[in-house]
Amino acid sequence: MPPVDRAKLPPNLRNLPLHRLSSGGLMLLNRDNNLVLPPRSITTAKGGTTAEEAASAPVALDLRIGPNIRLGNDPSPLPSNMRAQAEPQIGRATSNEDVRVGVFQAGRFANGGGAVDCGYSVSHDGGLTWTRALIPQLTMTSGGLNQPTEGQPSLHPW
Image (cartoon, rainbow, N blue to C red; front, top):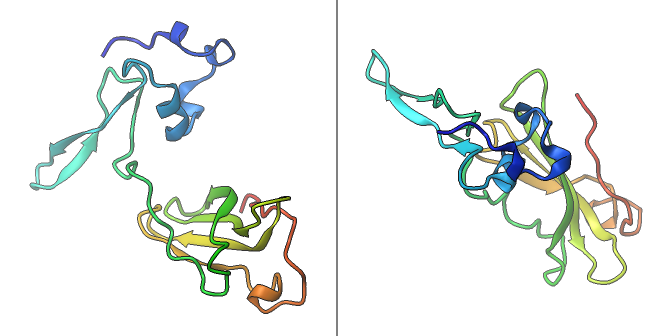
């Protein structure tokens, strides 16, 4: 693979350290396959397989990077005509790289913003599988006393 042609990047990103970009960011910026190569699989001495980063590639994708994964079915308390999500955020635990948490508005209102409730998803296997629910007792939809929310859920480092 030839060296990265930074002239193909937007001007404000040409000096950015590529290792600081998410895999999604790299995929969006990838032109002529000069930023991303899929990892190669090699056979280990014990007969297993493992990923090997291409020596000449600036960045190689983790084997878990792939198609979008559905986080689960919409929780039944959401009205059947309001099953959209918005404003998602995702984070990874600093103490365990396999733990991921996502938060989002659930039951998004079509007009005026806001949502019926806020939801969350948790993965304990690096994002391969997820559990999903509404944040308990946040609004009347999930057993609380509050009206639907205009707020945006957010994650804080943990």
